Length: 346
Ligand code: HEM
Ligand code: HEM
Image 1 (cartoon, helix red, strand yellow):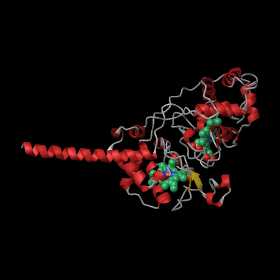
Image 2: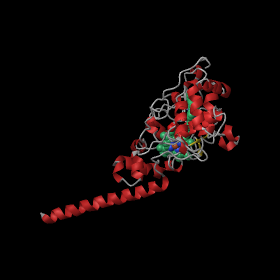
Image 3: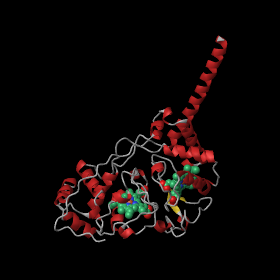
Image 4: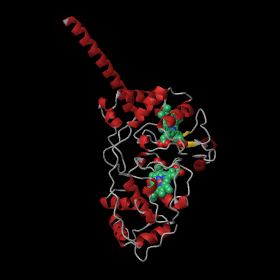
């Protein structure tokens, strides 16, 4: 009896140590390909994040008076309660106009190599000037934004405090700079995957680990790696097989419009997959809703393989472990309009 128990015990030990060794190998490989999201916001080169600047950026992110209608703010399309995105297929802005692309999340955007689906803005400050002026988004212009902000004494004061060395601190450049430092605070650390990367083997369950292994073995990690599990490089959408026209609309040539190089037709930045489980719908066209379907499409379009139901299931389970702690952002109290504030134009 005792011998039987001993044999069973050693068998169990063997199984656990093999599983442990496998976990070890998986963790080491993952640590070589990905990095955890830091616990505190990253510093932006040349743009020190003073509390005054972050506070101003926070207000501006929620400020609908940056738009001509005074209804639309960054928060409209990058809702901090919805994973930094908007649940819409494509962005819906001024006069209910529908833009050409899905709104990507602003969360962890600071870690992307460049901004927008085609990488046309080099950083968050350059990016922030776009939507304010885009006719289908906020439909405003820099001059009107400055007139509006200068009509609100609390903003004049906040700009002075955020940019104390400048004589006339209320400028369109400074709007973008303040928003940039606020956006850098929108990071989502401590996802189960981050805890795994930091050495907690129990942070992922067996199915999720299988998904992680498949994600690395099948080649997904070739384009979705680093701290943001993506966001670092540009790749053709449909490397092996072109997706259907609704998923990859023929009219959006992607990075070609930025570089004017034929090889960049239908090339897009591989998006970060951080928080992907809560930022439906998917792809720049926003036409795919279930995450499982997005995973299958990636298998055929990017890798030329039909992933089995089980593989799609485990990869999807792994992607769910990329949901981190969401930033707890309080809606700021914004200064009341004055008699000098321009009226909203719908
Ligand atoms: C892209 C921030 C307003 C819709 C982005 C990105 C950031 C951002 C950081 C790039 C993310 C990435 O590439 O991963 C902001 C800020 C705003 C603002 C700071 C306010 C000043 C809006 C509004 C809408 C919108 C009001 C919707 C009407 C979009 C869309 C994209 C985008 C569709 C992708 C566009 C493309 O790739 O061509 N935004 N956004 N944004 N945002 Fe906004
Ligand atoms: C988009 C997952 C392989 C490049 C996506 C999205 C997901 C995903 C879920 C949509 C994200 C969003 O819209 O927010 C995967 C998985 C893969 C894989 C699970 C392996 C089965 C690859 C490979 C490449 C790649 C190998 C590069 C050759 C891209 C690009 C996009 C994308 C460029 C953006 C497509 C667009 O909308 O224009 N991926 N991916 N992916 N992925 Fe992958």
